[in-house]
Image: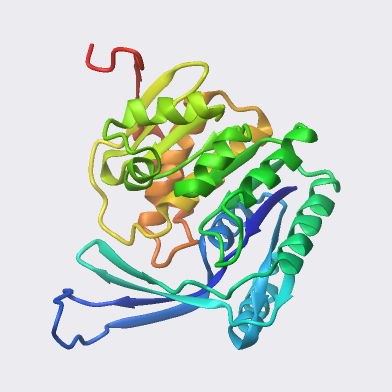
Length: 310
């Protein structure tokens, strides 16, 4: 069983428009609405690929009730700590293959609620867990070291843990020894203050992270690990909704780590699965047929992390 932390879940609303023009009115072609946030998206992808999964998170208000009901309807197991505040919403506007996302901050979380979430994660890890994912933003009120505490819980039980976050929560998780941290390029630069992807990844490894995988959008992925470093990509750009691509990659990594996959295989699956998420209509879904079809096309190039231009 893979445990996925959804500390700040959301009700995701996606609008599809022909073109996004600030300062004008838009006619929306399609509207989708469902339970989401990065943690929920990761769990949904894992479940869709046949992995036993449980979401542990925080939810409150009418939106939180709707989130629980939707996960029940999908038969996705969850253990949410109830909150007084209202679970947030996100709005994604998709136009021309690009996505513009508006993220509400989420309800303020006090120490009692966070302690209850930590206790829930500890119980889930003790129930035979094979992996832990901490994905997405922390809610207001949660300390920056919150993910780090969960990383230590998993490491105490030798359970591999993937953290997909940014800023101090990501850096604290790296210092706590997260097996893999998975920021995108912008998050990596914001966290480390280093422009070079490889040098920034080395900063996080130097802080204590076992490995670093950097999502580069249409340019694929960069990974720096204790076993080597690689650039991984598809030969062509795919049009679609890229919102959930990073979540699909996180799902591929934790599944691969739980089963003992080699790094090259994990990276190939992560890039193919994230690309298949771009082809799906909403975040948290993947085009499974496309996923398997794209796997043979993924190009993996080993690089020298100390001299990347050689």
